[in-house]
Image 1 (tube, helix red, strand yellow):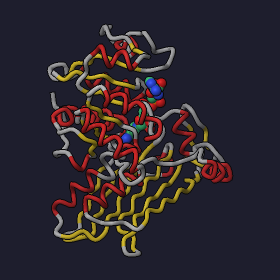
Image 2 (cartoon, rainbow, N blue to C red):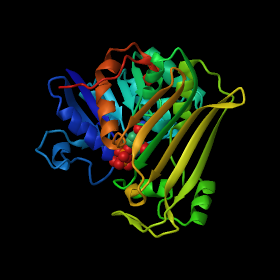
Image 3 (cartoon, rainbow, N blue to C red):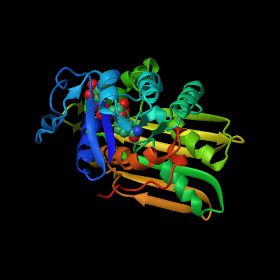
Length: 336
Ligand code: NAD
């Protein structure tokens, strides 16, 4: 049995807890951490709308990590290295393994070299294994692409696209993607850093480049508004024709002056209203050329929840240190 704590009981954390509870023959949930007053001290099972499980949400990680004796923590609190670093340090220093879905942690070795080597050296010193994963970054636009290159004798260029539907997401995502703004507000939001588009292009591009031995000169990112021609609505936002329905975000990696990796992630609400089909598409130019098309998109929420849990046994068994998805055995479903 692997003893697991979930730190961050939001949309993803709740799904991760449910998934862990469905695998009782291998995984034992031994704690849940969050700071939200409406969650703290309540039974995690009841909060999920299910039966009581006898685990109350704790707001005291220091105490819970000492008392519950977990083998691993799943960290689902935040996207950015800067914000999760103190949590990661605390977990490692208690000799506990860790999987995080923080987008920047999927591959921070180039973007945050100092923090990455600190995490790696602490992990080795305290005998813990650390992995950043998720649906994207973590799988669709990096791990899956890298895996596909295994059947190529040579790779010249990679172009991939994840076209998704933002409709199920809440107000935070609408804000960071600029949904419901005017075009002018969208560009202002980009300038102020309030609208960011996708988090993870630099991570995915660097992971692919390192796997293929490409020393990139630069990574460029372009964010553009997806301007709606029609009226679109979700529970949280209304978009009139001429307003912004989402963000088309492109990341490009350059080698010898040429683009060798191009990732595109147009994210919008109600794409079907303009006949946009969702999907994940990977084109590898090489020997041979490879074209993969997954329609509709792999669902982001379920995919993230599954990845975080499926990687648990592999992380627990891995040698100590800070690793990425490209360093692990082929990921697979913990199919029990
Ligand atoms: P969310 O906002 O619904 O949940 C986050 C939860 O963490 C909240 O309940 C919050 O109270 C809690 N939290 C935050 N800081 C905390 C702290 N210091 N101590 C205890 N609890 C804390 O977000 P979500 O949808 O569950 O996603 C979690 C994170 O994972 C986000 O940053 C999201 O962008 C990221 N994510 C990554 C991927 C991926 O593919 N890599 C996919 C989905 C989500």
